[in-house]
Image (cartoon, one colour):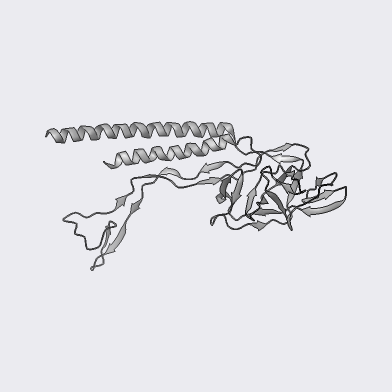
Length: 270
């Protein structure tokens, strides 16, 4: 099978993955705090892997990635080109979404950069921009999935008899008019675009993103939610482009397949 079929087939696979990313974005268009994913490098990657070999007379020659003692029998191999189209990664678009007023005292939106920290019962920490919080049966502030919101001293507990819950612009959680029971913690990363999406709008650090660092002097808005930054029209345009590229690669594959069949038939007859 010649390289054209490999290139066309791998190009189709790239667009399938690209479409998965777009579909996931569209599915979360109404998810508070969701950050759309962008296909960073969904391009055909023709890589020339070559080794420079210097002869005894100082002349530089290009050789393929083959054993040095392999005879070339009259032909100089100058390199090898990858036969695959490569989808290397998708990254997060950190551009902020619009704010939606809810007037719920436990709905919080971060003004600027940063992420809320959430912890599960096993001590695992996740990060999110989704700020629609509620109280559990023990008086802890949690997200809709029961993960506990982390403050400067750990989980924030306001008890079961709290009244008039408010969160001010500096992140202080105030009950009963003037009793401060905790303060939100906001974290950021050196390269937040590389945070790993774990599902349910939760993010975890990666080597590329760097470790979480506490943000000093942050500002939050209470009674409001940051909505998704997905733009439906933009995603639909990207979807149409991916579908057309997929169709083009599919036609190229069929053409190569037909040509290969003709070639085999011709050789068998000859």
